[in-house]
Length: 182
Image (tube, rainbow, N blue to C red; front, side, top):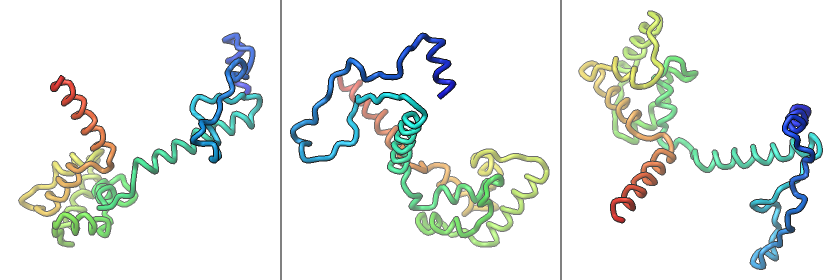
């Protein structure tokens, strides 16, 4: 609050009350029987730390709700499987994390194949080689030595881990289609 007040003084802002002079909005008739907690465009005055904290909590709550809606549960275990192959991950080398994607995509990874590959990764990390992404892991996964792991890594890298990528793709495609059809 102190920092905010300093910024107000520096920029010659004299009042927190941004609601003065705005008209009072009426609830639409179709919502007459409803409880409206906030409406779009409604400004609240900030007079103290509690008001600021309340606004901040509302913003965080809305962002968390949006994130929950956008990033749904990892149904096929793609994200957990990806972490299995990244040495810096807390779940590195967890064999159980591969079960769901292997079952879903009908890829049979034997314990021996995974164990040998994980040991190869550990040795390379011990020799100061870094694997910041799955692309580097795929590069050292020889398809003739680790055929099933190579196939699984390709699937994990190829598929989007959330619906956001797909939504963005369709949004972009729709814009281009509209442009070309106009």
